[in-house]
Amino acid sequence: MIVLLNKYSNNGRGLKRWKKYRPELEEKYIPGEYTVISDSEKFSKCLRQEVKKGERFLVSAGGDGTVHFLLNQIMRIKKRVRQELVLGAIGLGSSNDFHKPYSPVKHKNGRIPVKLDHKNAVLHNVGQVDFEDESGKWQRKYFVINSSIGIIAQANYLFNSREKIVRWLKSRWVEGTIWYSALKTLFASRNVPVKIKIGRESYSTEVTSLSVMINPHVSGSFCYDFNLSPQSDFLGVALCEQMGILSRLRTLFSLTRSKFSGLPKTRSWRADAIEILPSSPTPLELDGEVYVARRIKIKLLHGVLRVSQ
Image (cartoon, rainbow, N blue to C red):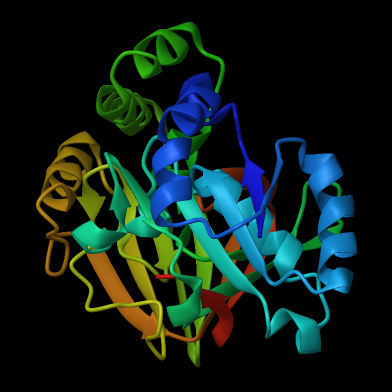
């Protein structure tokens, strides 16, 4: 078992939380010997070596961004070997959307959620994203929770920034930091002119927010009301378009109650692929990590990842 520890997760409290819960994790969930690596560059090299030796259980200890990093390492491994790997997770981060809805009590350690039952791993969908970056170079990334453009991507960018208010608030009240980032973005951001292609349909609009998801939980208490799981045959697509401040606020508060379908200025689809063509480079959020993209192509990879329970 290899553990990728992000000691900087949860505004720098990842290491402290790991040390606090490590004895109980070892007693309940972690069998025998294991290796902990906290350097991402070192991890990439070590992962290849350990997989060649036969290691098959890989664990993210951090937030959703740590899961995202580990996922993208796994997806670079040859398919034959990748099919034998199991992704586990210890939720040390701020939101831990990957774990939602949270596992049964027997799979929770204190106040942190865990996915460490690798013997009962299940197949999990993955989103493949090909996008053209600002320099015109095409990149390929993967996500296991959701992807978005518009205010959610911009709010995530602010939440992960070094802004003084964000740094001060995050160390004291994570949920409040999420709300601060969301509300500031709601008032400051502009709608993004975009052309959307889903199947045979082509749709031009000004996007307030466009989410493409495997998991309907997007951040903190915000959640879409889609009947969607990591084993579904489709991606959930949620569009908020041409919204002003009042519509944005109404939608935001509705999402805290897991209500979205039928709201004014919204549309939703079930799709296995979508192409997004913004009029100019725009932030692209994948599992909480933010990139900048000019063209975006997303498709569903069904059941290509094994995930612990």
